[in-house]
Length: 364
Figure 1 (spheres, rainbow, N blue to C red):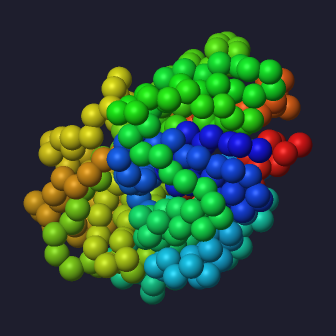
Figure 2: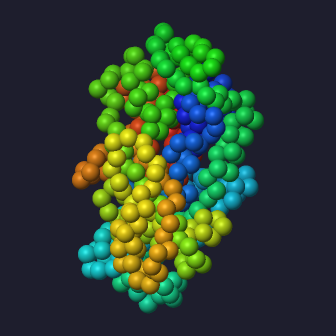
Figure 3: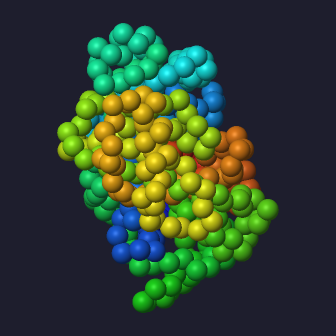
C-alpha cells in the first residue's frame, strides 16, 4: 500500500516505521519543521507499568505490551533509558484503599514487578518519603524521548519511508477505495494514497473533520488538560519516581527524574480552552501543598516553573477517563483509514504496540 501517516510524534513515527518494515510505501506528513514538536516533546518521559487501566481496555493492553517492546527497542537501538522504578504512595486509609485497588488492577493486567510495601519498607528505600503504604513498580522507568523518536525515524527511513516537514494536510477526499490528499505549505500538492492514518494528536479531531467521507458524528469531543511542571533547585533526594494516589484527570503531582538525575514535579491538571504552554508561577503554591503530603521537608522557595504539556482528552472535568479511541475500517466501514483519538498517557509507552494494532487494521 501507499500510506500517508499524519503526525511525526512518537505514535505517528512508530506506526510509519511498522508499516514501512512490512513493505508498504510510507510518507509521514508533519505540520511543523521537526519530529515530536507536539505532545511527544512535552511529556514526563516516563515508561509506565500499566497498572492503572481497566482490564481489557486499549490502554491496559497497549501499555503493558508497549512497555516490553519499548525497553527491547531501546536496548537494540542504543536509546538511553533507566528502570528506576516507581513508588505509588498512600498517606491515609482512603488512599491505602485506592492503591490497593491499583495493585490488584496491575496484577489483573499482567504487570510484572509489583510489590506492596509498608511504611517501614518504604522508608528503607526512600528515607525522605512520608507515607503509610506504597506500591513499588520495578518495571517503571524513564527514557530519552528525543533519542527514541530519532531511532524510530532512522528505522523508517532505512526501510524506504520519508518524513515531509512543513506539510499541513488541508483536505482529504475519497477516490474509489483510496484517498486524494491535498497538502499545503510552500509547495502545495494533491497526492493519492491507498491508506491514511490520522496520528495528529491535538489536531486529530480537526483533521478527521477534513476527511469528507468520514461520518462527522464519529469525531469525538476534545478536552484540553494542561499539565504544568516545576523544577526543583538543589540535589535530588529521591532515586525512584514518586506518585501519589491518582486525582481527577491525572495521576497526581508526582516526582519525576530525568536521565541526568534532575528532579521535577508534575504534571498537575489545568483544564484549558486553547493551547497555552506558559507555566503560571503562582501554581507553585498548590504544588507545595500536594508535595508536602508525602515530602514534608520540602524546602521553601525551591520550585521554579519548568515546562508544560497538554493531554488530548476525550472526556472533561469530573467525567470518567476515556480509553484510547482507534477507529479503523472494521468500525467505520471505510477501507484504508485509521483515526486515532485521545492518545494521551500512556500513549508514549504504548506507541510500538499501537503501531502493530494499526498495521493489523489496515492489512485485515
